[in-house]
Length: 152
Image 1 (cartoon, helix red, strand yellow):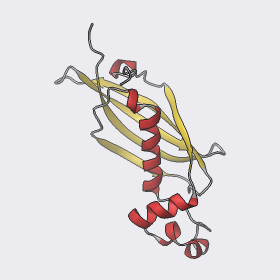
Image 2 (cartoon, rainbow, N blue to C red):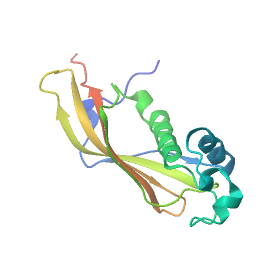
Image 3 (cartoon, rainbow, N blue to C red):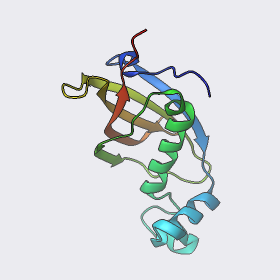
């Protein structure tokens, strides 16, 4: 197991970290939505073509799941993460389609050490996903709990 690189003290408020990119396929969109969000514009090409979206679009929950995967692969595996007490806001700003490449960043917007549990703190974050055109497609405001760096 690799040495952890990210502890509570390593988060600089205002600093943005690019965590990774991933291209989504229409097949993935339909597969996810068939199981978890089977609305016609996510699973049925003919119905989607006649919708306001003019084609298949990803479920917002699928997009959030992809963001989470990128966060874990590109960042959280190397962090002293204790999980999250919740998400305050999710905004789906533009449809995500097959062939889109999403790039995810996270920005620390607030950092507070715990008063009752001195071995940890809470980081409030803003996650953003942009597509290959640089258009913002999803934002998530949430928080994560992280261990403080052990004293040596």
